[in-house]
Length: 99
Image (cartoon, rainbow, N blue to C red; front, side, top):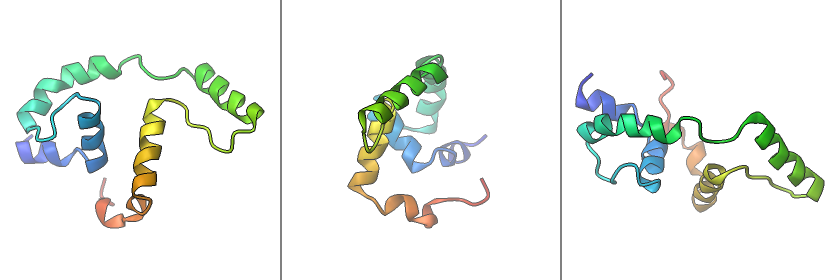
């Protein structure tokens, strides 16, 4: 896979996450991404919530009457991004229907 093809596979939202989490610098190259892949695998493997943990967070939120429930820091980060630019998810020019 060429450098351009590899970089094209990473959508802007994915780039933002990789940079925001400090896994890559903002101007990362295809070689940087290739070298980071083993780190990325280790970083994300066995992370996150089990179904039971997610259910507990959600049910606790429902029981408390929360009008919105965000499970985990990724959900909070995405929520912040959407609130900062609410129209971005509806800009269909950013989506490739072939993927």
